[in-house]
Image (cartoon, rainbow, N blue to C red; front, side):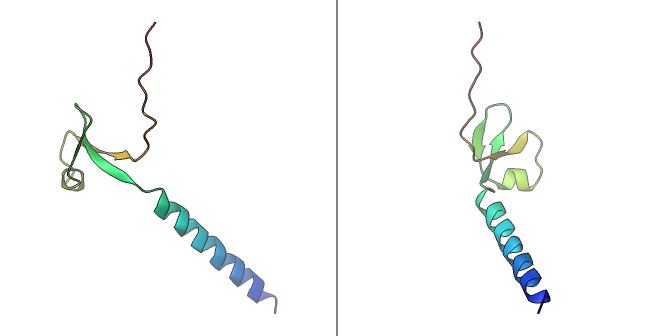
Length: 65
């Protein structure tokens, strides 16, 4: 009887972890020099000059004084 709650808890933690990682994995491929979105195939092939970027839109340039 004692193993059932532990098994249920472990399953719930695994499902929650998989759900969180699935939602936060929005990424796209960009050209480094221009920060222009390109086809994901460039990053998948590890083409020099291209890198994966997260889907976050919080890129803000710092103001110079």
